[in-house]
Amino acid sequence: MGVPSIRQLIAATAVSALCFVTTVSQSVAAGLLRDPDIEYALSRLALPVLNAAGLSGSQVDILLVDDDKLNAFVVDASHIFITSGLLMRLDSAPAVQSVFSHEAAHIANGHLTRRFTNRGNANTAAGLGILLALAAAAAGADGKAAGGIALGASSSAQRLFLSHSRAEEASADQSGARFMSAAGIDPAAYVDVLNIFRGQEALSAGRQDPYMRSHPLTNDRIRAMKGYAAAYPAQGKPDAANEYWFQRARVKLSAFKRNPSWTLRQYKKNDKSELAELARAIAHHKRADLPKAEAAMANVLANRPNDPFYLELLGQIRLENRDFDGAISAYRAAHNAAPRHGLILAGYGRSLLITDTKSGNAQALKVLQQSYARDPRAPRMLRDLALAYARAGQNGMASVTTAERYALSGRLSDAAIHAKRALATLPAGTSAARRADDILRAAPADKRK
Image (cartoon, rainbow, N blue to C red; front, side):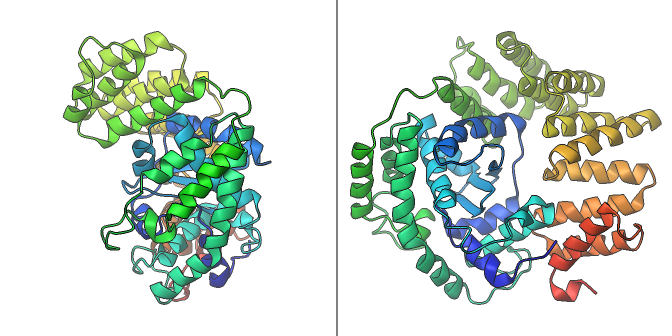
């Protein structure tokens, strides 16, 4: 596929809606946080506002960036990114839906298509990695944090961002409020999100939340949003289940990100609710206390015994506590409940791979290939798939898969090394060789030789 010019890609990153620009470099370094449960919840929450915006939920993916800073952004018309820090900071389903509605407005209003026509580029690991790395560079990150791609002076990149975003921000505010209203969500929730950052104008740039640097937050803007909220009252009632899925995603994310002692203190001992037990299971898992984690997961599954995401979590807990047979059993049950889910297939393949037997490796390779076909952008799956190929003696495939893993994180120089190894082994013209060539052509010029 053709690789867009650097100028096109810089422009593509300049249309972030809630793009707290200066944190994207850390986001690239940290990478994507792939979790089937959380991604399902976020996609479900985004769906009503995407539909209201005339966008397809099957064509716009919601991806979580592992970054404690508050951030959400778009870099093309097919992906909305939100950081773990922002998700944990918000306190309701309408709040996170207001973020998605604002991002959807940038896509629906054509703020991306005018600048970046090769939207298919992000469908590959290399393409997504390029976009993330360039987002970091446009934010003024150093070359290493941005995947080694030099885009010139950071001040120029930021001026480009601001010159392209101010009018669009006002447009996206109004459209986002309208989309929320049409989806039955009170647009006042977006005012609440803006108020999180209120009062920071007086702080020095180094002390401000990154939101402020790309999202000048004036009293006029907040007043305008209040006007939009009044002008577009919610039509109908929102899906009552949305709050459950928001709280479930936030509880799971918080339990994995925070100290287990902190997590356990948040719940009274007599609180045996589903989400309290979910938090306990993860906290005990982080303490490597498998019996207590298992007991808590048993209570969680008592509420939803066939939930594929809870079964997947049980498999992860067992696998990481070296109960390999139990992990395979749990992942198999999760796979049976959701046989086409790429990330669940990835976990199942990982549990089979860790047995390191001839039959286990062969089965793992088959399952991981299926996972790749469903969702090729999971870094851990790519690592496991490369290992499965190597064990099967398919070194060319192992190299191209490793190249894709590095490209996904924006490490294009490292990706180029493995892409060249792949091209030296793979038959010319094959799909795998074309993938390796795409990565190599996306790498810095001095790394392609």
